[in-house]
Length: 480
Image (tube, rainbow, N blue to C red):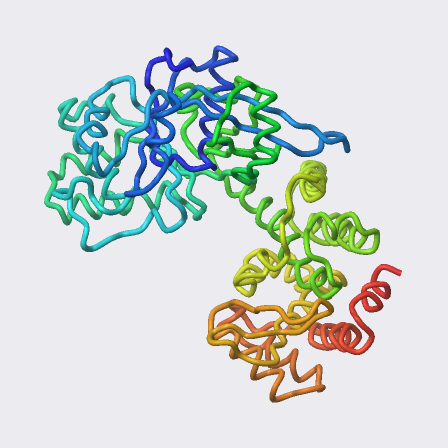
């Protein structure tokens, strides 16, 4: 595989890109639709470049999950990386790649914080401190190498988990080019000759499984691989780019779930409202039932029925898209939640839940409310969220709540935690007062939720029931 010509420059050598993009390159090479390898750049001072080079950039990807209700494990040795470069000790070699006409695709995953402007960055640093700074310097070297030829632009595919990731990266690169005094013609070339695609990526990558499990796969492959990484079977990459870009990187022709689209908004909405929305709707209900993991919750009949009803009867009908396609996606989500190889903890999902609920759950709820309907399960999850955020004491900036399994941390923005703490302290057992104080806060929700007739009353009724009778009894009344 490494004999294929280098065609991709990849910033990031972590588990996600290796089990997502590089795994896809492997599949595309095997299907004979791409024929290319990736140069991987370690973008920060510490990382895996040396470890990967020590084993000729070969490593193992193990994908595990369920297919048609049955466990399935796939194990591949990936050989689509040609070499790894440490940007801090080999920046000159990274820049040499910019002059290679065949290396015309860039991918990245430098975490959400990676696509950020740094006022103290400079092209004189070797390398620039920020990821956008590195991209700006790299593209400037390419611009110089090809004398600004409009055909020398790159297809740039950031995989960072922020909205409009390609557009954000482009804007910061152009800002740095201006501040660094680079020619206006360069900025024009960046904007016109290069394609900064907005992308949406979806695959849970769980990383190294531990020595005991890893040894089982080493025996299976005959390759003792300390860089083995694991993930789920499901994968999806949606790329918002001109049609011609798809021919440069035709991963979709290898049977992969890669979609080149004019507008990825429907895909993002689908993921946020169904996949992420299910997590956020269910975490407080599940935790207050004493559940620890997602799989535990979706395998328990009462909560499985609640989630099925929430997704198929309330969330999907609120989205105004083709219902059949959404139903299929929701079914895939439920199968992913049942993955026996992933232990996804509810307390991890609960972090900073207020903003998540506003973005993921509230849009589904308000569509119904604006039509004069109150979706029972979505309102119930709102009540459970308010109950979960009832803190009894403070530990520094963390509010501590109490549930069936004992005390638990409530971690969120201090202003959010103070709102909930004050509402519960001021109103006590006046559940309608608690709900009204919280739902009326425009800074939290973006609107006054008390405007919807009956919402405060129903939320308060659910809240009182789960508080006085327990979460299981309250849930049985919904699903009974």
